[in-house]
Length: 350
Image 1: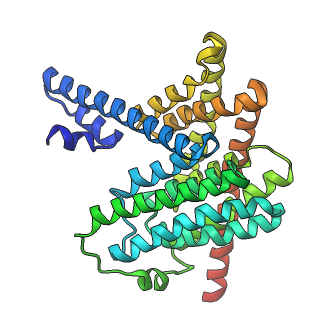
Image 2 (image 1 turned 60 degrees about the vertical axis):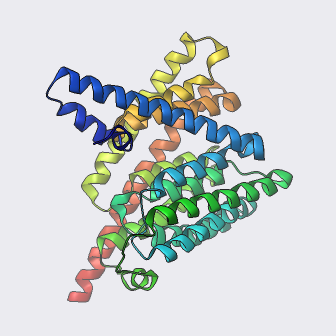
């Protein structure tokens, strides 16, 4: 494996190389590559988002984050169908993410929920056909981030331009990287494979319904940062219930530990470098292969931004409440949904 090829490995792959190193020299080499990967990734991410902020305004820096997520994921991940059709779907996904979150914010929570359900149905049914590729962690997360950081007027016009540029970049990179692959399935197959009795389709339906419902309830309760609850619910919903229980536990514990660590850093560090706590969290995520630790360090970036608006106590309270509510509601929703589907199946057989 070349130096460049090793740089392309994810955290788990790099840590497996470290774990299986037979000599000190070999282990030192893998550590060096891993550190270089983290440094290059962080520098590239920072530069990329900064350029988007300069081009489209600071209020649209989140567009840079969403585009960056899509580029980094879809350069390797596919949609499981013909490359040309997948490329067109990606373009459609960007249109949905650019338009629907903004429109949903203009409606009442209930009407917004219905629009979010329709939008997520397209993203999940056609973009997240293979749940184990975790495309929902890119598409649904991007949708929720744009929903939570909505803008209006001239800023929204610039957001549309930024999303158009992001769509062009992502589609170009995706098509270039996947054009030589052969796929036996197409868009029609995705539609035909929709089966309410399959675990995959039930997982998709839970994502489509539960995430918008969580957002709606949080907004009806006048809870700021409703997107946090939606993101928590999205991350907890998995095809198998035992995996969901694991995610719920790790999300709750990880956020509590993250809040405690952030609070300690907040009081220990001078106020002039509070903004860099979020960067520290990004580095921590880069070193984390397990979901629990990722939940800890993801808390840093969210709190670093929210503290400026709500103060430390308000941001910490919101973070804990929104995340606990999101994952617990998602678990309860899926338990009830799966129970209902099993009863319906039993009735049909009898």
